[in-house]
Image (cartoon, rainbow, N blue to C red; front, side, top):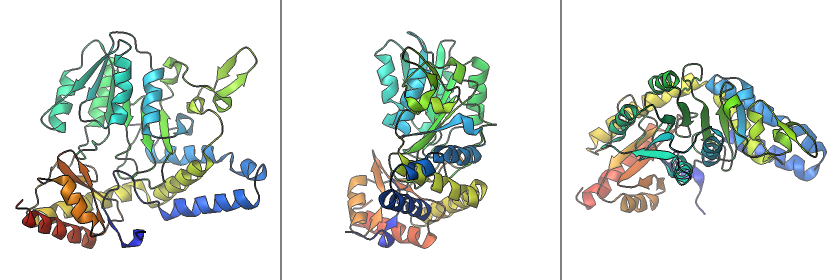
Length: 366
């Protein structure tokens, strides 16, 4: 079994190691659940979903009533696609290079008669520009990632959200590739949904995330799933859904996940997302300089780039295997080798990785 402390880990954009805060919180909860058990532990931890909402709201600058926990990004996009009022022949715009979590729910809607326009471009910047130009009077929804998983490209969200507001378009943001590494301010970005998982830069483990639902959007949404936690009241014949984001909860909570994500979010807020962002931008520039020094080509999105650097090599899978043998972890994505990091990543480790990439490239005449 590999020792995580011996890894040079640069694959945070897939699934990251768990942070210490989340680990300690889960251990504490599990010990209580084992040694004391229900109902006492359930009574103690039942309010923690509201604590999570407070920390998530603090992170993205919104009301806690606009936050609920979800299983993952895919669940959040599915909720948005099934609850927003879209009809046959309405248009939905998405980029073709999106991760499947932000494509498959819309492909499903296309089978129901919604016109889903998948926009391609030579690169993500050109595709985004084309998306803006593709907006028409029939456009009802735009669903987009705050940073593209392929190369870290970050679109101009403020400009896009202003355009959506002006044209009466619902905006859905898949924020999993920026939550915890860049500041997102929902008072500056008018979105209807923002969804994310906790398994990447939040380092909270798998199967847990959170979703923002704009309180002004709530009145437009259709019923989706119902359960005891989504109700304000119910009888044998009827029910009334909660008027906030909690309406998308259902039954028994994933307390392990909620406990973990709450601890992670609290830790990020204690450090301060502004401080984390500043460190990440500094590291991004340092890491690009190291790659340039080693003559390693990569996709450079300038200032519009998250904590992802995609290296151009002849065989990304072969490079991945070569580095893995040396306990260095990246991710092959299509035709690039993707490197991703956090604010705690070390420059010395990056140099070691870059040196090994250069060695592999020399061996393979790259």
